[in-house]
Amino acid sequence: QVGSGGRPHRHSTSRLAMSGGPNGGGSWRPAGGSGGGGGSGQWGAAEMRELCAERTAQYMASRDAAPGGAASARSNGYVNGKGTGAVDGHVQFGEPGRRRIAVRSLAVGEVVDVFHRYAQDPNGYFMVQHGSSGFLHPSIGLTDGWTTARVNEAWDVRNFDPNEYKTWVEIQWMHPLWYNRRGIRLDTNNPSMITQRVLPEQINIRNPSSEALRQPDLTLIHIRWGGEQPVNPVTEGAGGWGQIGATPSDNYINGLEDHIFAALGPTYEIISCFIQGSDELTKISPPLLRHLMRGKHLGALYFMWPISFQDGHAFPAYVDRSRLFELMVHMESTGIPTRFPHQSHLYKIFASKEWAAQMCLHPLLRTPLTTMVGRQAIANDPNKAAQHAIDALSALSKSRAAWNGAMGIAENRAGSPVQKGVSKLGWSWEAMDVRAWTNHQQLASALAELGEQPGSYVDQVFVQEWVDFDVEMRHFIVEPDLSRPETLAPKKIIHTVFKSKEHGAFRNFDRYDRAKCLQMCFNNDDAAQADAERQAQELIVRWLEWVQAQTHELPIFMRFDIMARRVSPGKAFIMTGELTELGGCFLGWPEGPRTVFSAMVRSFFRDPIPGAA
Image 1 (cartoon, one colour):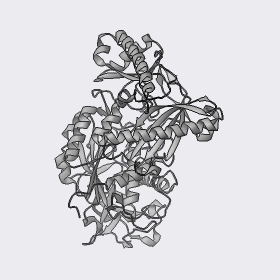
Image 2 (cartoon, helix red, strand yellow):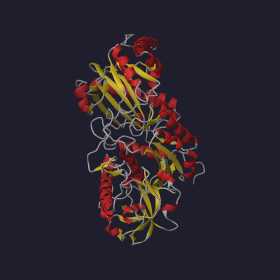
Image 3 (cartoon, rainbow, N blue to C red):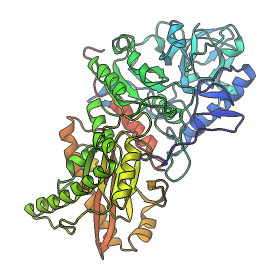
Image 4 (cartoon, rainbow, N blue to C red):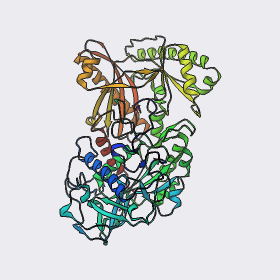
């Protein structure tokens, strides 16, 4: 959940502002325009081709980059060929490296089936069947899927080079109604507005065997931000999200959609719902969406950050948690499973952070002592609330010592009064709402500051004991299975150390590899570092066993942040820092997006529709 820290910057001084960054299609706009999806401006043929060339060149470069690109290196359209269904919950792919170009030559004026991809469109237009689906919010339409187009210039596969944009097939879209996320209709009477180049892998000759006529293997619903202010991907800095961007950003969504196409080919469809405020979440009709979904497998992905605040805060994609979960539960009850980030009941556990207070006395889960201070206490008397919170932590400290003693576990802080700590909010993102305190007065101020923010529906504030640590080891666990111990090992460990604290809030940190961490954090004591790693792995397995009690099927991804400190030669002390959900920051892990996106794609095929062919 920790991003770069602080509230992201949302200004651009370039000629073209692009919310998607290097992988950001679907949101180009003129500088000073009205926002994502092309704003109020539309591009002519020359401008569109120039921008599309840049976007697609970036896509080709990113997908061919190994290991951090959207796909592994190859010279054709798909990583593993076209998806052919699922067996025992695992996607079955075609032959690796096999070319999937279904056309050899095309004549001017020929009508063909074309797989439209929203991420390739520099203006971010999508198909609707009726204008009201586009110009009224929430805007809902087909962003990825088959449609028809007319070939604009003769094309021959012998001249095709996937890395040379001008050798792609130039087409004119024939679908009559296109809108962008801001409700602007595309002028389809102007040929320059509907002209685009696409990969030949996205084209089929129109005939009874065309792939366009088959039932999609997969239909996804994407709940996305469609407000005037785009989501800043916050790619820069050691604590930034990296080039993949923050999860609600076009960067992240386009990267995922690139990976889906690379893995499955044009065998899926995506229906996107663009909202510009929390109220619009309740205007989405899950039964109607379910009726529109044609795939053999279904899923919904929610690219939002749920918070405990009213709208009006000017932070894109931050939405009222109650409205989002109302939609999620309605969708799930309609038979549309949540595939990102987690099914609703589990997502609440992660996002609320209440697990910290619930489990802090359990000796085996090593969680900092945590109490929850009710909003009413803060509103009536924050000073009294602060003193009672400190007293509660001191009482919990005695309880922990007693519980540990009853279990025969040594406790080196036996019953000590708590003198300092942190206060923070659940339902908070990008390290926005964490404050350190060292005395009663600072805690009282932090409680008032966190609890009484404008538009706040915060019902409680967490107050935790302070934990001294030298490094935070971020463990990335992908597709864990308690019956297969080898799956419980982290795919990656990132070591971070906070380096600045502004007004009591935690912001930037340094990032180390294992060797640098050994030097900087463990005084070159390899045995102590190994001890911390061993303890951390044992702790993670315990947490996964606990998570199994919260859900019958383990999540495909979790990040466990473990605080560690060298305490003596060869020995380390660890504590749980955070349990982070699918969508948590990759913290500069180059292979992270590809690894996690692959697991996500596999998860899409867990549950076929009963009776689906």
